[in-house]
Image (cartoon, rainbow over all chains, first blue to last red):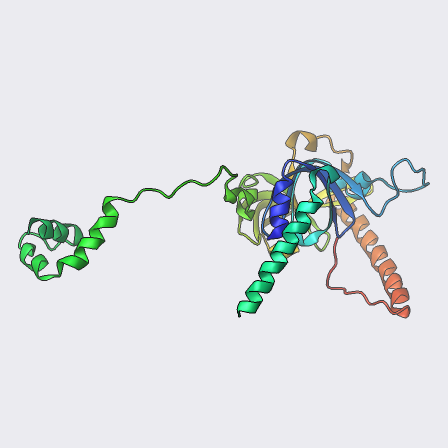
Length: 116
Length: 182
């Protein structure tokens, strides 16, 4: 549940979600649930398999051309199981706190195992 | 005596002459059963927090219900329909569903009716902005035309994938064909 709690602290921040099909969705994180399904608002799209826009590669297509169905889509609900990465805003993440929480959770799990 | 008669009345419709029968039942067991009904104050409130139901799958889907959605499936299909029902997985029920195909600058819609989509096949749900939908850069073409082009494109992709797989296999990489993701 650590990551669920962590993502809950990121609500209303801008994140980029990279899916397993290379689609990048950048938007405002609206909600997360226990499966890490993610809801984003006001999305813009990109594609991690395509060269960076403006790099001047000849004959390459844009993300909008590769994913035409997302043209009229504003808000998305993404199933947690198809997410590859979530790119986080560095300023909103307290790594020290995360580390501590991880240690605490690991210690608690160890204690639970010893009791049994 | 008065108290036990009152209890008899609330417990059952035995009433009137039931005063006698109520007095035969042991008073201590009846006494406690009436007390919770008398006073049940709500539990103490914790620190202010967003309600936990904000972070459930159901809460996320609730405001998408009865809206026109784009559903992207694991096999590459794109369905457009009105979300009518769902559960926590989330399996979905879509009404007035069309399957939309895009090929180059053209698209077409194939009428499909009502769909129940098993949750594991869903990649994402997109809420469609109805105003922006009218300004699609692609042009609508007939199903026959786009379907033919789409099929040719799929065949080409299949052929290319086969070549890639064969070359990867020669290098010792094996791909799981079950997990097609579009």
